[in-house]
Picture (tube, helix red, strand yellow):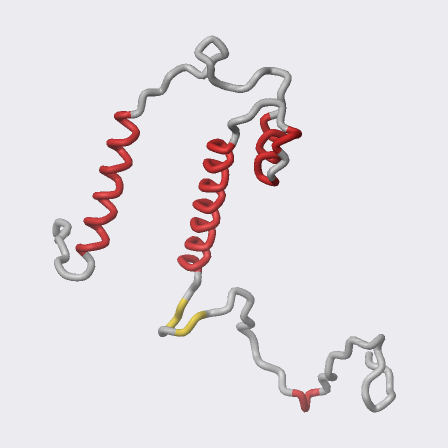
Length: 139
């Protein structure tokens, strides 16, 4: 017989409430935003013959004299904020993907077979063209 979900009170409740609060704030912002059409008739958007990417690049590096139209800094701020958010998500996914067994991190490419000892004929790796310190070539 399964039991229903139980509410854990204590330290785990605070992050959950903060996440729900953040979702509520973002939902209110999205609901109350007026999405006007971005057409040339409405006075928004870029002309057809202007490269948006070039304009953002000029704004990024401060080449104001090369810009055909001005006012791309708000777009540049949005691009940079999205880049930071995606980088944070990538870092968080790497942290969450790390495996642990018994409280110790486990390497992704660990060997599971027998460990060979140096006395079993293994030779040290060299990176100088195949010559070892003793002068003999390695196989």
